[in-house]
Length: 382
Image (cartoon, rainbow, N blue to C red; front, side):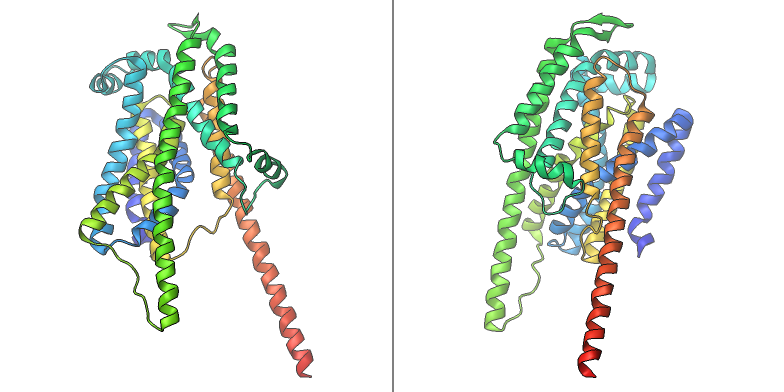
């Protein structure tokens, strides 16, 4: 079951890591591995949401999503989007950006380095908004309760995350951008560029968030209608078959899933710029991650269960927050990609083991309750 579901992901991982070694040596191997882990963790909620929608489609459209959809996800968002960001920031054509990345790496790296303050401001603000909206939301399950409880109370203030993001952007522009390195280490005032790029990142987040919210609301409305229909059927003694879409309905649901996947991919793609500027390594790492997101989607559909590791989403968002801060700091200071990657992996691993420990405690508590009930039954029987 596991090999059947994750077989292609394992194969792509092996090929991707081998390609990374040939392309960038063991350093490239490490960067691709880090990018893959971060992409999987950050996109875990994507798999959960995808699974809820995919189960409504018939077998043909499920297979289409998992084949053609993978090509769109990997070669669309994970390849085209990074190139577009570099092209816009460096003010060159997308085709020229790819050619430079493959044929003239030194010139490409110089262009990306010169454009890095704007990329960092755009990406840092975007990722910061994702993190702030997460920690300011009042959730039933809290990982770091001592921190998340007071922040959830603060989150009741309207537009607080937007205000904080703008303040952080302004401070970053006045602190780092006024003395940013460009053109061979020469200090250049990039304040205006950083402010414009950061505001563009904020606008992009608001648009993506609005689209995602719209889709989620439509899905919730549909699920509520199905639930009401099931309740009515139970009252009348009828059995309601599971809703499986086909034809035109499934086609539009497929398009919806692709748009949703693109929305979820923004954080992973932008976060990748905090680790490397190399498009080839970026595509390899994010592509491997995208394959696992698809496999996780299938696994959740077939198992009929959602995420058991309840803190993993928290860890992924804290990693996003760390990447946001790192991106903004790199407007002026250089931070090694290994340090950047390890920060995210440590947070995600910590949240994973916290989830495992929580599950064991719950299982032990349930076992204790079961034993107590059995003893009570025996005593009453005596």
